[in-house]
Length: 338
Image 1 (cartoon, one colour):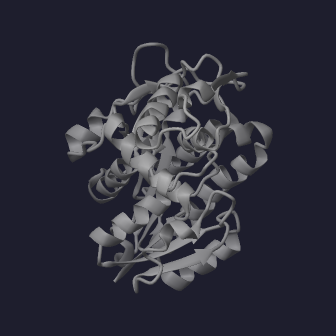
Image 2 (cartoon, rainbow, N blue to C red):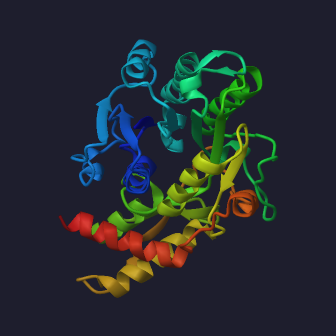
């Protein structure tokens, strides 16, 4: 049985990916490595914790010695790397943690994997000849778009926040290990994810939570910042497909083709909540929407052209925003009720 390392598996996307991967890949032993910062929650993995081919390890990807010992113990055949500091506001307040985790942490994983898997440049050991390192990244590395156009895999990098700059740096390191060492790497850059298990600090959970508690629902600036929204399970399916079938050294953009501005998101959530769980006090959840000072360097618009992964690998999103947001709201209603 091959072993695979999943980093950051207790986070939002990772904790959705792990159950999906285990269900569809019975030939793998999966080791989930997570530092369990505020963003990690093992409760999100309670359904798999007793599976015989699942192991959780607490640890920090910035600790090189620890990573070396982990690779020596489990002899990982593959790595899918989710672990990252990812909240833009936090990166503005404290950028150092983002540089350490996203840049140094990614380097540690890559370099330790290279030394386990390879005898030298372009020379894989026989038992690791098909080993792959899959790096999960973001569309924010491309910067911002105007009112038209889409991010493609060839779009020049132009990160505008410490978070996106740190992810751009990690992407470049991954790229360099392909071109310098011939390492079997692949990168996926995704648009904004939403769905079950997302941390309460993010936009959609915040709107739902504050609506239910009767608080003001804060929207940055004029609410016209646009994101391409991708349901998390669709993203997980795309990651697995790219991991298995993607071409070595390539980048694949994964996007939902669901451009919505922040004000629309808030309005839509309030409308659905009004239908499912009307306000006990009467009135509308929409009355709670308030506009707050925009954050520094707030990118206007992100939108991904997913044609490459659709045409080359056959991926397609199963959910549009209007179907996915209903599933998301129902999950959070259940969470906040317990």
